[in-house]
Structure formats: C-alpha cells, structure tokens
Image 1 (cartoon, rainbow, N blue to C red):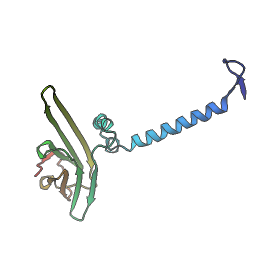
Image 2 (image 1 turned 120 degrees about the vertical axis):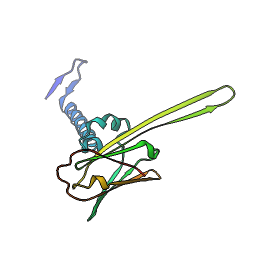
Image 3 (image 1 turned 135 degrees about the horizontal axis):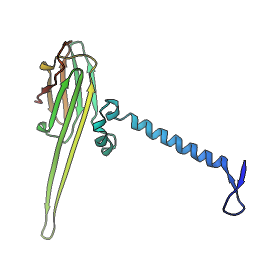
Image 4 (image 1 turned 45 degrees about the vertical axis):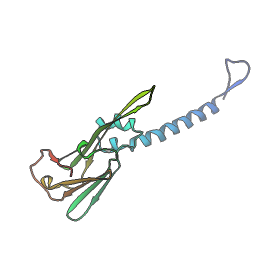
Amino acid sequence: MMRRSNFGDEPFDFRSMFERMNRQFEEMNRQFARFSETPALESGDWNSLPAAMHQGWSGMQIDVAEYDDEIVVTADLPGFEREEIDLSIAGNALTIRAEGGVESDHESDHYVRRERRHRAVRRTISLPVEVIESEASASYTNGVLTVTLPRETVEGDDDSHHIDVE
C-alpha cells in the first residue's frame, strides 16, 4: 500500500517503515536480553542494579563449585583491601559486599590535582544447599576472594552470620 507523503509527490513506503521498526525492535530485544543476564537480576538483588548499570554490567565475577563436603565460592574483587570486604550468610544465600576509595595527589610548580574514586559492589548468591554458617571461612589474596562453606542441613537457624576475611 502506497500513500502520498506530505513532502511533495514522493509516495510514502509503509513496508520500508515497518522493516526499520522491526530492526529497531530486534535491537531492543537484544539489549533487554543482555540486561536480563546481569548479576543483579540473576540474584534477584534489585538494590544492586544501579551499581551494575554504572559498571557496564561487569560487576563482580563469581564461580560457585559444589564438592562432596563443601561449597567454594570464588569472587574477583581486584583493587579492594581485605578490610573493605564484608561477607554475610543467611539460610542459603551468601552476600558479598566491597566498598572502597582511592585518592591520589599530583603536584607541580603551578598545578595541583587531587583525584578521588569510590567504588562499591554487592552481590547475593543463592547456594545450592544449606551450609554450616559458623564453620564458614574466607581468604583474600591478589584480588581473589575465596569463601569455603561446609555443607550440612541446619534446621531452624535463619539468622544472618558474619564471616571474617583472612
């Protein structure tokens, strides 16, 4: 179906317009597919969504390994100090938070510059089984956090437990 446009005698091509619209919708669908695969949405942690958006969806990379007697969670946290990392566990959910800042001063005869950077990441991981919260341990070496969680079913203990990072 062709119709005259308001811009002279050239016909308006609906087919071309709908093809362009379809391409735009396909691109939107690709963008939303990437959006839905973000760590913030996978974990159901909507509070960390703004931070994930700011970091370009990179966030914190996590590996979860399940062994016979323990669960081992490995997280990449480069640039943080051990004291800036906070871990907690409640039920079958492990929450990792890291927050820190860096300041640098540059001086010359006529110029002084001070730069500050603040970074915070947070991620909650659903664990595949119940763990013994009181026996959990964590270590942080060269920007890699390793959390070891012994497996066992614990009944009636829904309180959060803090894990010290060594």
